[in-house]
Image (cartoon, rainbow, N blue to C red; front, side):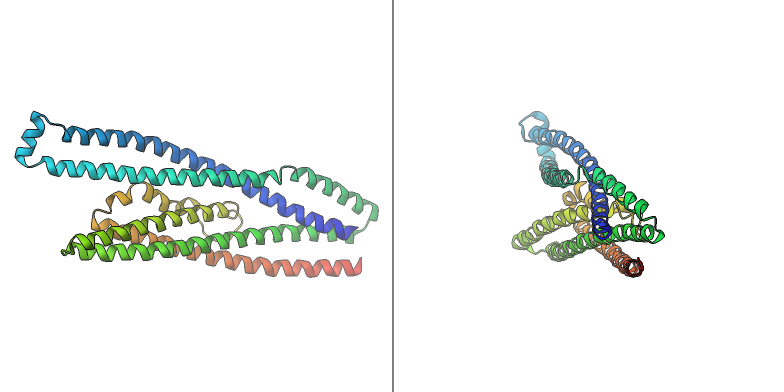
Length: 312
């Protein structure tokens, strides 16, 4: 009987841990959703204004005629059209991110449905456990249950570490793909500066399109990684600035792609992607070290429990 309740107790501890993590993730996703919705509203207003500026320049009038004579209208019109495209790109990415966050919120809510009554189950098992200890009137019985509780905590924590490591490795791969695409875009962009011509420009923009997709994928993986780290931050013996992991997404959505018309900005994107890749590698290495330490601690407690069972 005591063995059965120990197993159930270990399982319920893991489910409680999961519920706590999912609640934290849900709260964080909702904050992100609110921020990206504000960004979308701002970008929609900005796009309307930018389109009005283009329409004004394209309309026929004395001012436009005067600007045309001076040779400044065409340059200004091109600049305004570039700004329209830039805002459209940012708006497209923001809407894509919004859909991904909404989907993540739906998935977390579904997970929480499975653990809605987990606290009630925990207190029920706890009460059952206390009755067994009271009836046995044994120090060994209490020590056995305490050992099982510690095992449940450590097993739940190792599970969270494994999930975070998996998410981190996925983010690392996505960032490596983004770095590779940005390096291609930068290479073709440099060639284009020396007169590569229309074909080279087309290839460069194709590389930039690919880099955009890879960066967005990296953002999504980074977001998932950051969520897995939420509940680990207070327990893991590693330096993790969780908010910093999403700065990669921030610089992207705040307009770095709009500046890819300027060669230097492709290089800026590349350097930031490399920095984030190294940052993720460092964190994943730290998580793996933590997992090894916890597994050693788990083995020790399991041996203690086996000794208690043998003498019980």
